[in-house]
Image 1 (cartoon, rainbow, N blue to C red):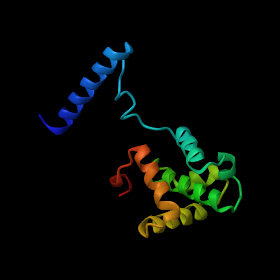
Image 2: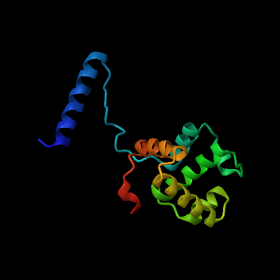
Image 3: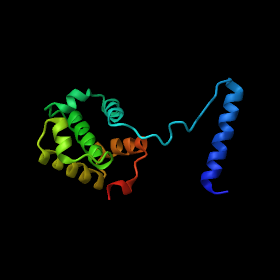
Amino acid sequence: MNIQEQVESIIKEAEEKITKITGCNCKLTENLNREISIEEFKKMIEREFDVKFTSIEGRSRINKIVVARHTYIWFSRKHFRKTFPSIAAELNRDHSSIMQAVKAVDNMIETKDPLYYSHINFLKQKLHYNETETN
């Protein structure tokens, strides 16, 4: 039995025990491999940075909003594979601004800048982000 089969067996056993105890049909893996939509991701960004998405779409230069905006742009490009022009149109920006934001976040990740690094890693975990997606 390989590791994946062992994990699946353990999860199934846990589901059965929870169902027996609670009487509710429990499925622990129901949403495990489900893709997160861009709309759901926008809500994640709002929660993670405690900002409204309308602020991200706006012109504010408040640091918290800029970090949220750049993070959204970076994931839009790297995870959701949106084009620079489509991200620019969505945020009412020039495509070169979007390219600059992606480059800035790449640099922040590379240097493990604390301002971005923890947010990026948290969101990567939530998205089940695979590093090979960007290559």
